[in-house]
Image (cartoon, rainbow, N blue to C red):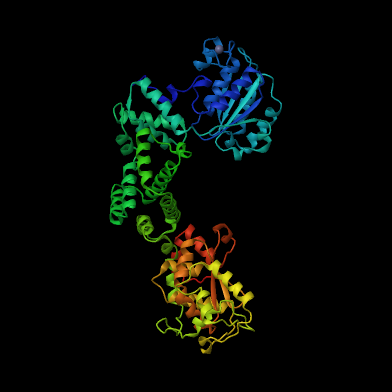
Length: 584
Ligand SMILES: [Zn+2]
């Protein structure tokens, strides 16, 4: 036991090449040494435990080495290197500003700066946590930093760059240290484990790496703790149990329940997690991460973002294959909203449970008609619209049949056609086949037989041509939609499409796809009579055009915007219902 050295110290890198996860930065430092272009002050910034002090020490050793390698590394064998390695070099001074932040501490350091080195070329002063220096100490230090002697070199290290005064920043070469990636950390832990003869499961090391959040020092200290706890065999189960982490397994099981739409299963897993002593918020943020990991598995481009061991990444890939992107987007949305609202919720357990229920229902909803899902809340709105007095069972009177015959009625002089031709040009009846041809027929009819003014039999039936506004048409249109509540797709099409009024009581409906087109066409024979009756105009006719979705995007009614928002966040529906909102 007396010889035990913690891994973070024992495996502290002694050369630039052995520093983990800071490749480009160490290369820059080596280049500076090789080309002999050294600044007088450096600022090393970055999170704790990523190698700032280690790099500072290697740097100090390398610039004092009497026999550096061609790569710019210290030789580790000359007198200077040995004194560094044994911790007895006078050329390196370390000050921890976290505990020595007074003016007096800085003055003592400055005194040291004046004395030239006995051995080697440089005296290196490392000030750790430099942002902790008191303002007076900063000022005392500034003068020395401005005009240091030739042999002095300062390396300032900080985890909080934003707290460093601009006057200091402008005098330093700044190096930003990155968090060490999980795979780099795992590689290094493997190396340490193998050197120490410790058995391990790769998954276990991966969990330790994740837990250490990019800091190698933390990773190694957890590693030491785990190897002591597990008696030299670090397993995934032992790490998860000892660090009190939530097992991946819970999330895999939970997601399976989501996929199956198994609400009770999901709630029971959550209950199990709570009974095992885990915080609900910890659980929900873990769920978001799990769903996010599944999402990155869906695309080979984002796959490298999945930072887990090989065996688990296979499990992720398998589960991701069972989830649609849409499901994952929505599930992540729900779980992160839950996470966000957790702190302010008065019934936290219910909040989480509600979110689990919502996610469990995502796939179920998808199985039913997707359009229905997007617009179901509109049905709610619909109930409040008063139905018109006229009902569909009351079949409209005959005149509209005549109106259909005169496809292009002219308000001043209507074209009268005889019976024989009437059959040909009746586009609205079931015989309707090729509209283009029929239009052609009509034009022939108009040009060749303008003299046909003969009154047909139907002409005697009463005709009306009441004027109406687009608003009135729209109202009648929606009223008609309200009479066919079971045809949800058509209803939602009717509500979302745009209508414009053309000449001669004709109106144009814009839809976005062939299906909508067909549905409207199929309804034509009951829709047009209805509109004609309600608006008291026998000449009302409808033209349906398909617009490319892109073109349609530019037409934004308030309803369109709301639908769009609902698509983005289904919770808006809840908001809409809860507060009894109106669409403006
Ligand atoms: Zn050396």
